[in-house]
Length: 207
Image (cartoon, rainbow, N blue to C red):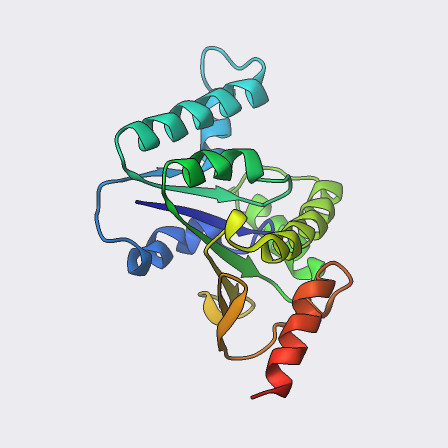
C-alpha cells in the first residue's frame, strides 16, 4: 500500500501532470486520488457553500480513513504549506510506503506568471499574489523538513523540475540517501532549503 503526496507551488502543474506522473509508482488502478482544489471548488458551487475549509478537511479525512480501512493506495495534491505529519503518521501506523513527489519551478515569479495566465484563461481558481508567494516559501521549508526527518515522514522523496513543461526528475532520495541526482535544481540553492542544499553539495563532491 502506498501514500503518494504530489506537492509543489501554485501553477507548477500538479493537476496537469499528476495522474500521469503517479503511474510509474503504482501497482494497481484501484486507488483514491484527491485534488483538494477541485473539492473546494465543488463545495463553493454546491447548495451548501459555507465553512468551505472545514468541509474540505472533513472530506479529506474521511477519504483518508476509507483508503486505510480498505487498504487502498492514497494520492493527494498539496502545496505542502502546512506540516503534514499528522496525516502521514496515520499511514505510517497502517504500514504504508510513503512517497513525496515534489514539483519545482526556478523561482516564485514563474509561479505568479503561470497562475495569472491560468486565471486569465479561466482555467483555474483565483489565488492572491500574497498566497502564491507564501505557498512557494512554505512548501520549500516543508520539503527541507521532510528531508531532515527521513522515513518518519517519507521513505522516498523525488524532486522534479517543471520550468519547461512536463516534470523532469532531478533528485531521488531514499531514506535520506541520494540514489539519483541529475542536477541540483536552482531553487534548492535558496535560503529555504539549507539542509537539502548542503547535503546535495556534499554528495556531488563525492561523485
